[in-house]
Length: 444
Ligand SMILES: Cc1cc2nc3c(=O)[nH]c(=O)nc-3n(C[C@H](O)[C@H](O)[C@H](O)COP(=O)(O)OP(=O)(O)OC[C@H]3O[C@@H](n4cnc5c(N)ncnc54)[C@H](O)[C@@H]3O)c2cc1C
Image (cartoon, rainbow, N blue to C red; front, side, top):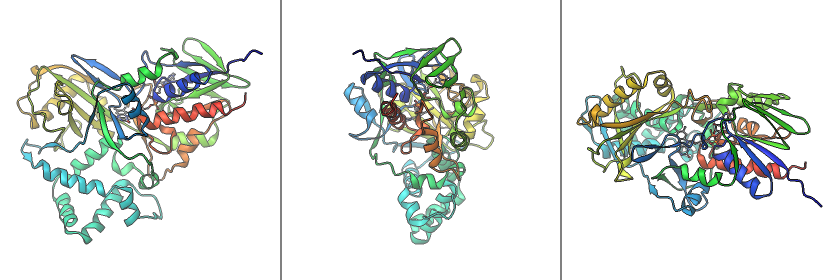
């Protein structure tokens, strides 16, 4: 008896597509990945800038523990990972005057407490209606300040200084959007069991995607334009047409929202609604490699109070040398509406403005000290149109489930299709594994 291999086309060679393809290949499926870009990795993108690798997309392994699939892979591959506690700050005000970093960090920790699920459960749940994370934090702070003088002081401090704006900016870089857009209910619903510390991949994420891609047939430069299903699935790209038994679609939410790919028959109403309901935030990076390291490496994060006339506000700078003594790189993080503003500016202006901001904290740095740089524009990127998922106020987890639901011979994966740990690399990886298993559980 001859066994006929079942065929699968995976759309997208990001971490979710690579994980899915690998799992299916190892289980005897004939798999091809169609990838629009001329590289693999998608929102994982490591570039060699001068002497060092820099991640222009994902850089951290969040909540690493023994069960963490990416951390496991990193260990298995012997990659250099560094614990990244984000606890050492250099903070300056708009004039460059140093602010006590220890006190700043203590306040930050207190504020972080206000967005913890346990706190929301204790002080606000059950919510009669969804509100924003911003409103949630403010009212928890209000309640805490009545009970605890420390929080009373914190509240007063936030009311009288620009600190609140600074904390907002730091939060925004985490969620890639403004706190008043994020659903508080989504924080309550997020009961991921993954608990652990954050690690930074010193030589970048690329080795992980390269490993997952080994022995998988990947066709680069193939932009999918339409997917038609009947007894098989036919995928039309800018160059060619492919047919398979099944498709795993890992198109980012932003690409689905732009309706750049036509589905025939068209997607079910619940999925279309989910695509409209869910949102991707934008997080960008300005990576600057300097000729030499003139700053200290005893702080991991550099923060400066932005002035209101700023062209765009930088959330914080990450000092690579804190984790890798040989690195001369500083990376600025710009998030949400500020990132969208930045993306419309010319590189020269962005670099000039970024350096001007950085000079408040490190006044000795000059333009001539720059060896090379790279600026991302994830919001404008036609193959992602954003950085990662957040749940807007009033939108609940059902939309993620609807986005993830299989549709005939088409299965869905990607960071926006997983209930817990959405937006993260490991969540995207899990979504790919789930889609692969769904394919395997489907009779021909
Ligand atoms: C700046 C930034 C920083 C981040 N930092 C972290 C971090 O530190 N830690 C973390 O865990 N996560 C981080 N993330 C999130 C993480 O990168 C993503 O969640 C994850 O990489 C998404 O993987 P994916 O497979 O779902 O999507 P993608 O990686 O986007 O893969 C989808 C693929 O589909 C391709 N594609 C798009 N359109 C088409 C088409 N028409 N035809 C064919 N192919 C197409 C794309 O080119 C892409 O390769 C960050 C993201 C960004 C942007």
